[in-house]
Picture 1: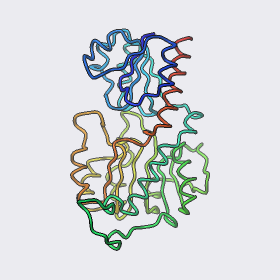
Picture 2 (picture 1 turned 120 degrees about the vertical axis):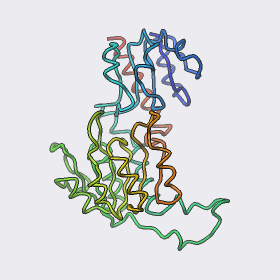
Picture 3 (picture 1 turned 45 degrees about the vertical axis):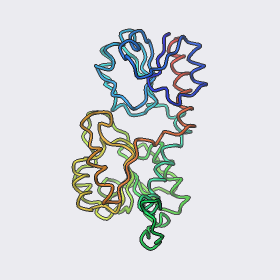
Picture 4 (picture 1 turned 135 degrees about the vertical axis):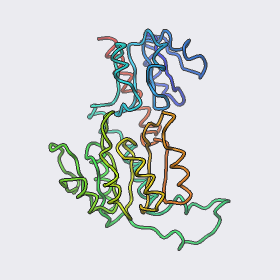
Length: 310
């Protein structure tokens, strides 16, 4: 099997050694994509590129696309199916994902950064004023945190938040999801948002669904904190930007935006607001730790090997 690693920066060497037992491995260096992709039977991708018809066009021998994600908003699954390409990802891999902690850790970090106003309080040459009262913040202990979605990330967050002394409530449309770690289930998103001081989005998303967090729910978050490290498409971003411009929220942290790899995303408009609002934007780094990425690459390489040998 001829394997291509499309984003090789920091790719785990143990994973590459495993892949080399399956066949020759090449890393894309940013040159002629058509020449690189032409004979590849498997491609490892991350999140930098949109996997669509133009990306796939030269990969005429492609049989497997390997993506270290649970969400597929950057992937045209219909185009893969039409080409007979099998998608290998982390979707549904509950046992493996239970041990991956990077994203919930990042969410806790974003939450603390908002509450303690770290973005503005970090001193540097452009901000040299030693004035602790200017950056007086809020405590996580005693706050009620509302979790939208209570899968592996939501339930892990509930445990982390309990350790901080926060109270947690959650909404999940799946009635089979069980409460844990002291988190209380509520019956609707509106009820969750009405009661919580901090709202964290950790739900899953499937391409084509309407944003479940629309203008009316965002309007109900006046004076609250909002964190989204799941998928940008879960939130009506036009409504979000309009409310940010009005100073509607106590603070907002985004690790994701809609259409991240597309030319029409709203990143520039969001970044223009960071100077005037308590807004933090990070470039989808929730899962981007050395440990989690290496573990993911090894897991997916083994999954590819199993599929190939079968």
